[in-house]
Length: 283
Image (tube, rainbow, N blue to C red; front, side, top):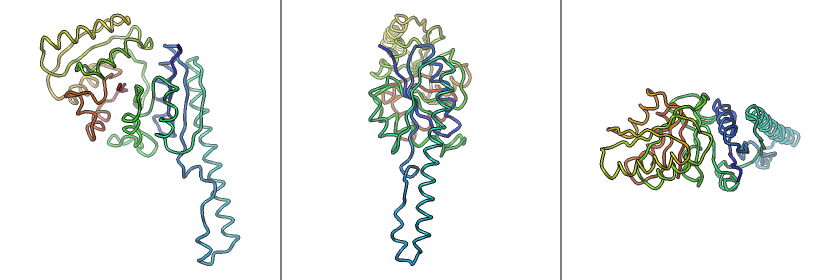
């Protein structure tokens, strides 16, 4: 069965990275790509309710002009949306993969809820148009998407880089096991260097769990190395990705362990903000 990636793009600096990561993953795995641009309701409104202005004595001609301006703005918003999708499709097609595009109106989460069953992986940028490039701001939709999606979510960073070295955070929780299984089944990362890390003290129970995870990865063609690290999970993982040459962090979201705290409230924001590489989240 063919895999389908669902990528969300906007007018932010991160949109190109979303497209290039989608093209890279699809090009290596044979997946199809569906690209969505979701216009906010205000962008798509064709005519405002200006009837209240009549009571203020506004002339009918002025009301007509304002209505026409709203219509022009709505038309322009649609044209911008189509242009964003066209650019996105052209970038992804450079990887030789099939792309379809959709322009939607409303809330991004509504589109995700309605369409995620048609895909296998969701790809979204770390930040959106409103967040700009400031390192202390994340996309307003990011945590909403991660919490709501029942599919793995690939969070793209600003700059695309082919993935060669992967760090998988492992705590033996249900979602960590799902993350290992998902990764093992995904041919996009074939041939990459893979490391399994547990942040915490070594134990015979965790040794066994890590060896099982390694065996699962081996069945998928990955020769993973096992590592233990001490310290705060957020500090350790962000430092490892920053200083040890990793190109991707894979982990289970909302797992029942020390890693669980990374994905509740402000800890989610802090973790994704701290990592300068893409983060692949699995529930």
